[in-house]
Length: 82
Image (cartoon, rainbow, N blue to C red; front, side, top):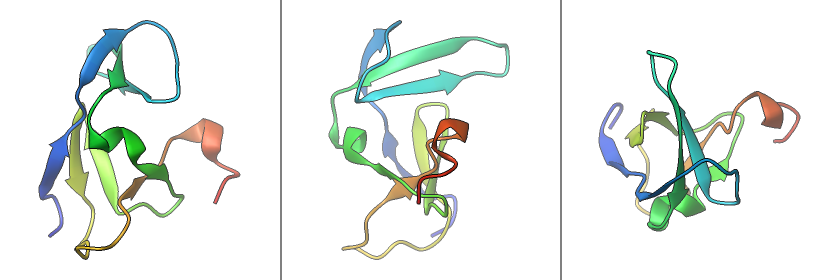
């Protein structure tokens, strides 16, 4: 269901980019990297995603079937990637 919590991106804080690093930008301008250690680190990019991050928390944008891949938009650097 839309806005349902899927889970929290868990991992260790980092200042270095990496394959499983989620960069979280907070309203106060703080930017934190989380080097993912749980299953959410495997979520793929989509220009038309079915989920979004609010901080480190992942929420559904729509109903997601049990066997459906969960995706989110990686951001501007990935604009040209389907």
